[in-house]
Length: 396
Length: 204
Ligand code: SF4
Ligand code: SF4
Image (cartoon, rainbow over all chains, first blue to last red; front, top):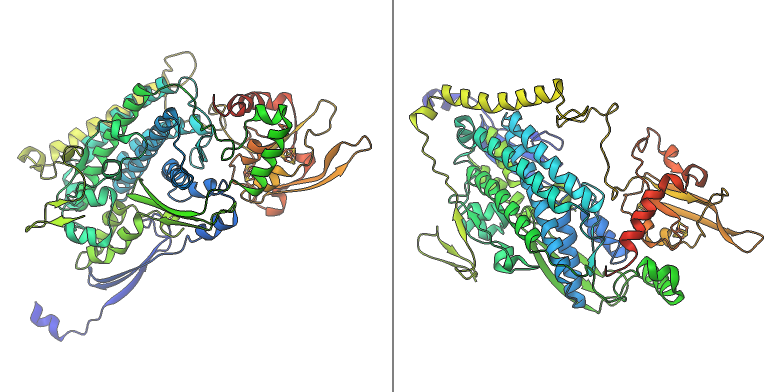
C-alpha cells in the first residue's frame, strides 16, 4: 500500500473550522492542515468575541465594572463578580462580614455547578448523546432558577458589590436549594449511567487529548484540565479565599489528562460543589452582609431619603466613583475553568487605571495544537469541548 | 514552588498534603464482558430514558396535583413562568397618581448606567419643581444591570417584570421616550416594595 502511495501525487488539505461551527462553542476558528483525516497542523484563531473589556473598564467607575464581568465567563458569571469584588477589596483592605462570605461561597458554587453541567452536557451532545444534554440542561435550568431567585437574572447577574452584596438570600432559599439538589442528583446519576460506562463515549474520549503534567504546568493549565493531568492544584485549597478553608470537600484528580479524565473530574466536582453549598447553608451565620464603610459602599436608601448629608454623599460616590488608594493587586479565584485572576491598578481616582484579567481558558486553547497533532479530525470535537473555551473570557 | 520527581507523574504544588484532599477518579474502569457486548448496555440506557419518558408522559396526561402539569417544560404562550420578585425586566419610570413622573431629572441614573443607555434633558415647572423634559432610554444599549434603580433617590425608575416585546426588528423603535416608559404606581408596586426592602439598610 505504501509503495503505491509513494508515487501518487497527494498534498495536504487546509480547511477552516469555524468561526461559527457548532463545535466551536464561542466563535473561534481552527485552521487545520490535514493529511487524509490526520491532523498535521492546527492553528487556533481567537479574537472574534473581542469587545475591549479591559479598555471599557478603564472608562467606567469601579462599580460599573461589575456588569462587564458578568460577560467574561457567561456560564458562571457569579464567580467573576466575586473575583473582581475580592480584588478590589484587597486593594482597599476591606474584610467583608462573615455572612457575606458564606453567601458568596454559595453563589460561586452554584455557578460552578451550572458551568460544569453545561460543559458535560454540550460534550455529550457533540458526541451524539442528546439525551444526556437534555437531562443536564434541565438540572442547569433548576440551578439557574435558584440564581435568578437570588439576584434577579439568570446570566447577567450583577450581584456582588464592593464590600458586600446587592441583597441577602431570599426567603425560602435554603429549602428550595435542597429540593433542587435532590432533583439534580437524580439527573446526575442518570447522566452518569448513560455516559460513564458507555462504550461509544469511552472510545471517543479515552486517550484523546492527553497531556503530561509537566507540559500542562508549562503551558499554564489550571482548573479541571490541570487536575485531570494528576496535579492536585485548586485555588480554593492552595490559597483559600472566603471561607473555603472551613468547607470539607475533596479535589478530584485524574491521571493522564485525557478527555475522559476531564469529564470524570468535572462530574465529581459537581458533586463536591453540591456538598459545599449544603455545608455553607448549614453553617450560614446571621449578621450584616455589607461592610459598614460608607466611603466605599453606595448609601442605603433609608439614609438617602432621610438625610441630606447622605444624599449629597450619594451623588458624590455615584458621579465620581469610590476611590481606592493607589496601588496594584493580583487576586485569583477558582472559576469553572481554572484560575481566574484579576490584576488591578489604581491611581487613586474613581476609575480603574488598569483592569487585567487572567482568563483560565487562554492557556488551554493555546495547547490545542499540541494536543491535536497527529490525531484524527473527529478528535477535535471532544477535546475542544472538554477544554471549555469560553469566548467571552478568552477574547474579552 | 513546583517540583517534579523522576517519573513526572507525581507533581507537588505548594499545598500542604493534609489540607488538600485529592481523590483519584476511576478512569480505568474495566468494562466487563457484559458491558462490552453492548446490547445489554443499550437496554440499560433505554431503561433510563424510558423512565424519563414515561414519567413525563404521565405528568402530561394525568396532572396529579390540581390542574398544573408536572412536566418540566413550560408551554410558553399558554403557561408563563412565575418570576421571582428579584427579576429584572425592562426599566420603567414610575408615574404619580396625577399623571406626572416622579423623576426629578437629577441625572444619577444617566451617570451610573454602564451602557450609557439613558439620556435626560431636565427642565423646571412653574412651581420650581424639576422634571425631565425628555427621558430617552435606548434599549439596544441597556444591559439590565439595575444600577439605575439602585442609585435613583426618588424611586422613579424601577426594573419591572416586563419581558415581552423587548426585542424589535428595528433599532429605531427601541429608543423609548418618557411617555412610553411611564407606568402607574400600582403596576410596579411589588417591585417598589422589594427595592425598599433590599436597599433600605446597608447592614440589615
Ligand atoms: S438597567 Fe443598567 S444598563 Fe439598563 S438603563 Fe438601567 S443602568 Fe442602564
Ligand atoms: S436617578 Fe431617578 S430621579 Fe434621577 S434622573 Fe434618574 S430616574 Fe430621574
